[in-house]
Length: 330
Ligand code: ADE
Ligand code: ZN
Image (cartoon, rainbow, N blue to C red; front, side, top):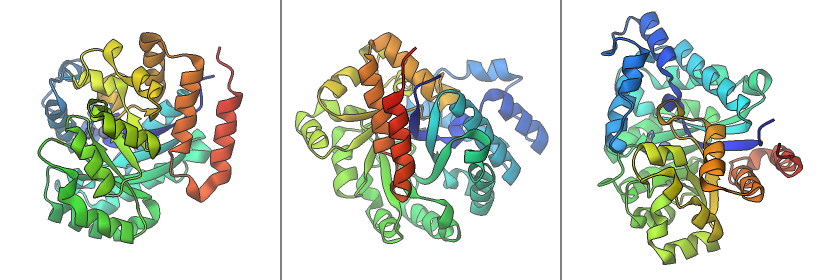
């Protein structure tokens, strides 16, 4: 039995495996510019975040109907459950769909057809987080928030993703203020490729409760001290960092040093279909390559539930935490 864990950094569009991409392409009459799944997998050699994003957005062309989004989420939840994920807070990128003519309602209600039954079908509790694409305008983000209003019963919070450098958190100040006024929780990608200052901005300007990635905080000792003091959760994604070349090798990943410094780290998968592994694979990789002890792995699992947005069900959080404490490593 795998270690029970929460997944807090997972883009549902990044769980689109090549086999499902071709199945949906056939179903929807979409022509992909790859002969087969092998040729598509060949394209998974990324130089940086942008080279990944280009393929990630291209493949979204196959997602068109509610059933497509339902199938996508079901495939992810089945894989996640098999790797010990008990709770998943799932990102989606509405602008990447609405700009192709797929309506917000199709995306949210399609995902909900899966998420609404996930506890019964997969044994995984879920929350949905809507991300704004930071390389589009703040006005577009604000329109997206407006567009989401009829669906806010399904959405727990907002996030910020896509190409980071040159698109600082401050660009989205008003959007995050509006989201907060609607009672939405706030997270943002910061310090993946962007500088440590973006992490401080995400906290001070956007009022985020968790930082997605936050990896580059290690370049600023005063920021590390603050993140430790305020117990700000960081949703790290080690295999993603290797594939997008934000670290040279997994062996060089700063996770052990970050834990030693007292940072509240969690381990997640980001876009598992593209980066070679789901949540359990990321845990296995850091255990094997970074030599993390069983107590460190338990700490990562504990942190994942402590940092999750389960305030509306504290009893469930306590049950998950008890599972983590009772877990016996094989
Ligand atoms: N969208 C999907 N994956 C992402 C990542 N790792 N960084 C920024 N935006 C993303
Ligand atoms: Zn991400």
